[in-house]
Structures are given as C-alpha cells and as structure tokens.
Image (cartoon, rainbow over all chains, first blue to last red; front, side, top):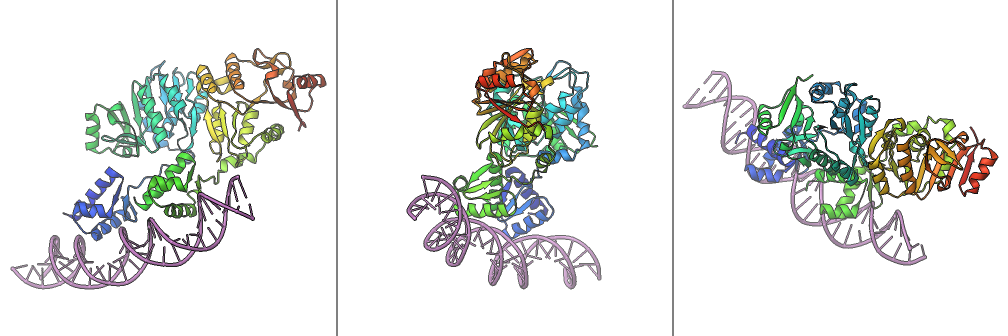
Length: 254
Length: 254
DNA sequence: CTTAAAAGTGCAAAAACATGCAAAACAAAC
DNA sequence: GTTTGTTTTGCATGTTTTTGCACTTTTAAG
C-alpha cells in the first residue's frame, strides 16, 4: 500500500461518507493509527479535508449567507445566461429559483418575452416587477432566512397546483450517484415538489458543484434534464452524467 | 460521533429551528447534558450562537442593514408609528399590508419583539428578513404590480387558513357611509379576506384620506376597529367615526 | 420563599494526540 | 553490489482532550 494511494483512498472515503474516524481508517487500511493521524494531518495542511479530534470531516466550503453573496456580485455567473435564455419561448410558465445565479437570470430576461415566472424568492419578485411582459407568481409560505425563500406545506400545496414548462435552479451539490442535494431539509422538500411539477428541470452552476454531495437529496440525478456548467468537469463525471441521458452544456469558464 | 461533527449538527438544528434546548440535544445526539452544555458554551464563546439558560438561540447579532434603516426615519410617517407599536405584544400574529406607511412600520418593529408577520408584499418580506425575532409568512399568489402585492384566489385561500391578532393597513380611502375602499377589485378581494380573519383591524393614514371614496369597497366602516390619523379631521367626521364604535387615535401633524 | 431544572466544578477514565526513536523500505550515488 | 541518506512506519512514552458522574451553586418560575 503506497502512501499516495492511501491518501487517495482516505479522500474517497471522505467524499462518500462526509466523515471518517482515525480508528475506522486504521482498521480498513490495515495500518497503525499513528500513520492515519499523520496522513490526516498532512491532508489537513493541504486543505483537502477538515482535521478534527478523532478523525476528519469534508470541508464544507462555506455556503455564505444570502446577503453576503449579494454584496459581492459575481459577474462570472453571466456565462450561464445565454444557454438558459435560449431555452425560453413566449408564453411559457417557468420557475426561477432562489440563489444568485437564478437571480441573475431573472434580471436579464429579454424585455419583449411574455412569460409567467413563478418563484419563492421575494428578491426575484422585486426584480421582475420592472419587467413589462412577465406575470409574476409568488409562492407563499414561511420565509426561510438562510435560503431567502418560502418553504413549508403552504408552499408545497401551492406548487402542486401549478404545472411548469421549465424550472431553473442553481446547483448546490450534484452527484451522479447521490443526485441533486442541498443542505437544508425544508428547502429540499420545496425543490422536490417543484421539480415534480416540471416538464424540464435545468440546473446551472460551476463545475466544482458537480460530483459533490450535501445532506439532503432533492431528487436522484436522472430526474434532472439539463445541466449548464463551465469548463473543468472531470471527463469521467461528464460521461457518467451524459450516460444518464442528461443534457450537458459546458460554457467557457470566464 | 465526533465532537466537531456534533457542533455542526447543533448549529444546523439551530438555523433550522431558531432555538434549541440542552435536553432535546442530549436526547437527539445521545450524549450527556454535560457534554451538550460544554458544546453550547464553546460555540457561545466562538459567537456562533447565543447561549441562554436552558439551551441556545440563533445569534441576533449585528444586522447593520436593519438598524441603519432605523436611523433614517421619515418624520412625516413616523407619527403613526408609536400608537401602532404600542398595540403589539410578544407572540402575536399580525398582518402588515403593502404600502409606504405599512412598510415603515415593518422597518421599525422593535428588534427584541417576537412576532409572526404575514404580508403579501415582497418588499416588506425583504425588510423583515434581517429582523432577528420575527417569523415571516409570505402570502402567495399572482403579483399585482400597481399595489406591489399578491392577489388572486391562491392568496385568498392561503389567508383563509390563518387567523390574525392584528391587521395593519394603510388608508387609501375611508368613508363612514361607503366604508374602506381601494381602486382595484383584486386588491379589495384580498383585503376583505384578510380583515375577515382578523381579531382587530387598524388603519393608518393622513386625515385627508378619511371622508374619501374609491371604486371598490373592501368592507363597511363598522368592520374597522381602529383608525390612526393625524390632526385635521373634520369634527363631524370625527364624531361619526366614533359613533360607529371605531377607536380613533389622532397624532399631532408633524 | 420554595422548588425543580439548569448550570458550574472537580475528578477520573478512556480516547486521541504528539513526540522521539529505531527498524524497515526506498532512492540515489558510488 | 554496496553505501549513504531520506522517507515511511510502528512502537513506547508522556500529554492533552473528551466525556460522564457526583456534587454544589445558580437560575427561573410558581
């Protein structure tokens, strides 16, 4: 068993389970706990995992609070815009979910395109109030502050009464095996209900969000119809996504 | 169960529910209450939560935006504020309707008052997102641009399922004989449903809106419980309003 | 004031850790 | 092939962290 090989196995185990203990690893890999500790410390220094007492955790790149994200507008999200806009047709009923990428889409809808836009995010509602042609439907419910969106049964009941031509969502985490995931249960419930009502679901997000997992699965990967991402997708990830019949659009990375 | 992992779970639970007790946590996470207490103290030191007797609360820390707005009061609307705020009690479920006066009320709710605020106006939702103590319920439905609010059957159905302790609305037009009026049918329908569910309805607006009419009556005058206005009400209007059993609060006109 | 829950304190056991050291494995130079 | 130097690994040692228990003190509600 080579050192580098062991390191790779540790990282694999970590992405799979999200957590790992030194004892388990020592047992699985048939080396002493001291060795494992040295490995974990090293990988921790390299910022490949989060070293904690007793083992290690996946480093959750901080999902910054919504308001923080707003204060630092990211123009790089613009590249996802064109493929998304190309899908739109007059008269459609579409969902634009909460999140920075989605909001950017809402703000850049063509002024002469008549649409019905459904959303649970009051910021997007506000953005669209200026638009001369779109009807805006706000999904009601309890406001969930971390995601800046409505959640709960009221929201789900309302969603169930609408059928969507197209749903746009940002990618929190997508994984061929573990599906489309987010980190809050309540958000997952609403998103699941939304996708259930959609003819077509489109995810938008940078390539590093693919092959990633989070606590709550919204839907398995094959429920997604289209993924828009930027260059840098691992070839094996790319092929396995396409093998599921998911359309993959890759835009140049900035 | 790793310590760091447990800390993360505690913080997750906290963002989810806003509050958490030591006993619940000890039970859920299957560790002793002593351990939980140590965890909470540690996380408290790190300013990741607010440690209180019996458990912990989400950090109601610096919300600069929220308090900044407090320091820029519009004196002409401010006068309606005090009588309205005096009616509030912790734990109430209130409606804050759309409109400038109402929005001003939303922006100036005391930071330490726990309330459930229901509204159909995304601007007010957004104002309240940074309030540390209020739960916000957004009434869903079609966005009606002229009034910046949700309307339609979805909205009415959702309203019918909630009971309100207190409803605050701005006065578009109020008349002893013709009641509380607005100029749009769809807005009237929603407001009527809202008042129907309220224990007490409070109107706020300048004196010149009294003794005025508009096309669509929401409710007859006697359905209103309280009117807050400024000095200048015609004496006969004043007496006829009070004759209907409506409480009338007159604040000095700036 | 009374009382029960919650919190702080000291302590001991177990687990995890860091460190130094020597054997083993490996690479590179001779 | 041998030597030299480096890296890796496991072990023994002592240290630190974590945790639950017994005990006292504080808190908050009636």
